[in-house]
Image (cartoon, rainbow, N blue to C red):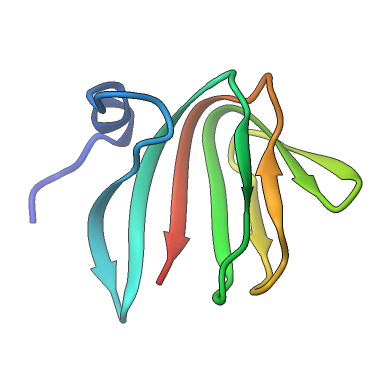
Length: 98
């Protein structure tokens, strides 16, 4: 596999919050997405989801709380936990899921 620039892939996506699977490891997806300061609606999965911010920030809504996830920080949303992204989130996001 060739060297991949995550920032270049994210910048080249047709729209924000459209993720692209770059690789699979042991059944898990390694995806990249671009955040555009708009909210992303509430969702819930039957698997844990890792959210790694490369640059910018993600304001993650979990229950009634908002968690700021900054560059180089990873938040793991447990399976079955509803979550959304609040307005003001921007930058490059890596998503690890199945």
